Image (cartoon, rainbow, N blue to C red; front, side):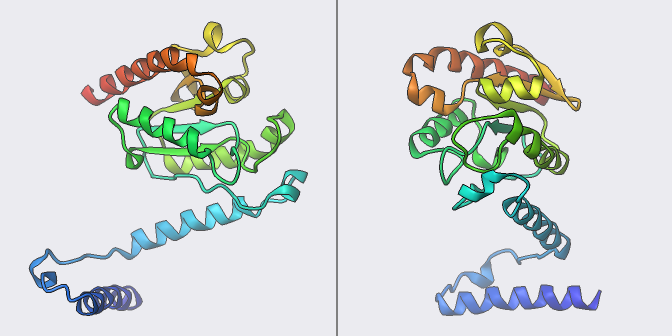
Length: 221
């Protein structure tokens, strides 16, 4: 207990020192800063979990891993988006990320409302069941930690693997509600699919409206 109080006082003193250095004369007029050691410990646990995943050596995908794509792991997100695998050194390329951010805006969500991760954690040349079978335990751990209200699977490969169904996106996966570990699950194309085929704008918009209507119903309950 004494150590916790010392840490909280130290963090508060750091804020005051930074205010003096930055000549922030309004510092005293702001509401007091409160620190919770429990929150800090929780954040450390999340970081430790990420470091464990990023140092995984259970398959040969790690041999070509240069930079690990860090997920967005906001707790209790409205949606956990699951992409098949990192597109390069990031979960999305610049073009894919631009589309993804527009999707969030379209359904009135921000980065703080969502979590984003991949099924296969390392950048690999193609999605394979071998890699997915090894990485799925990491995704399961993230789901248990984050406790998302719903999940959206991005693309046919991750949709087919997670839901254990075969078939194309339109006839099997889109505009339907599934369930994984009692979590409502929806499917749509990935941002990379849209980069490759701009004609997918219409079906993706339909999917987003379908998902958004479900979120709206959940908020009313």
